[in-house]
Length: 116
Image (cartoon, rainbow, N blue to C red; front, side):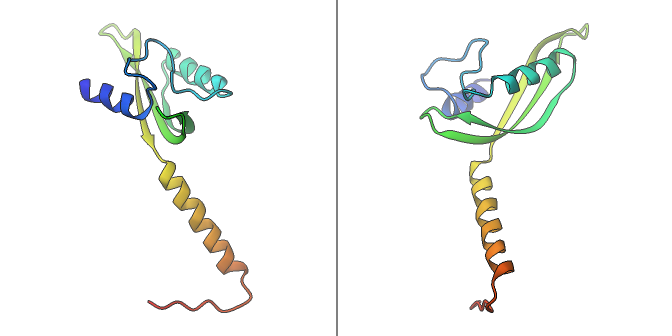
């Protein structure tokens, strides 16, 4: 648990404190997204691989893949949520660059020669 806390602080927290029952990393204008995720969890569902944007501790926008699952007690009552966020900012940048290069090649009238 301490490792997860340090990882969360390193990625998202603006200060050294641990967030208490609030989404400190939510981006303004995405509050509805947070509410939809919470409703899924409250109804017993999961939020798998949601690609969204969050704030880093420096205030920079990070693209993340998010998965949230309910945590249940021994009676099946939902008592919390497990939250896993993976940063995909670099992957998204690479995908955009690849798409741009592919478009250049596809629409090019000239031959493109490469030295390998």
